[in-house]
Image 1 (cartoon, helix red, strand yellow):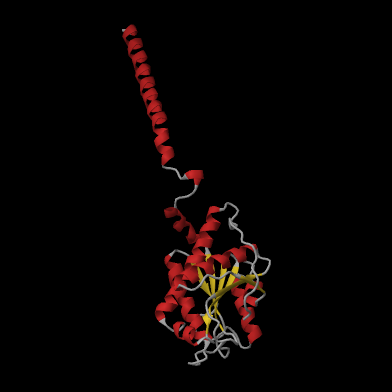
Image 2 (cartoon, one colour; image 1 turned 90 degrees about the horizontal axis):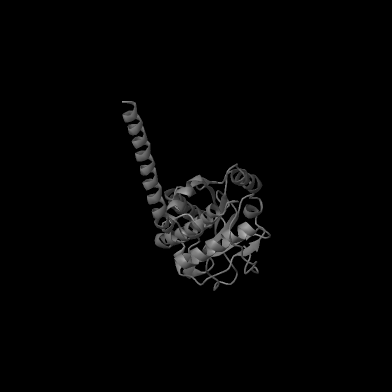
Length: 261
């Protein structure tokens, strides 16, 4: 009886070891197939990158507001402030669809405070909130030469991250509205100077140009502008997600200023 028990025990150990050996063999054989499913260099699949944007917060600033209407259309007399807010809300809707948290500096036609200085300080307080990753300020442009047209983007001079963000945004906006490609410009505007996060001031077009003034009031064109801004912002956020330090991967050389607001 004892010999039978020993025989059964040995057989049990043998069977167990055999099963383990087969499992290890199959695992070894499957490894090449598994490696082919991994992106080169360990990069994250694009389908998963979108999910990562849910942790980001973007401040959208509609320039001007209240008694400060900003630039005025040369033909229709339309004020910049209302157009800024329209584009901002379009950008907000698209970013939120991407899973990005959005904070607005102003949500209606009013300024944030009485007086320009107090209004700007209120905007600064919003974009200086903890957790803000990007600040985007939307404006309409004007110039003494009515032939000048097209979108522009400005970043705080000396900011590598701001420059990268501005380059991505202006490239995407120009492509979206089918305008000639432009470079981002260094500047020293309040909304980009006082932001601790990468920031960009986008001039959507020139109200001093009659043809562009009409386009800037067209809902379809406004949606194209907004989609361009969103694409540039999302490209920047994806570059942050891919970089372990949270910093943009690519830097761009400074470009001379083409115009001033």
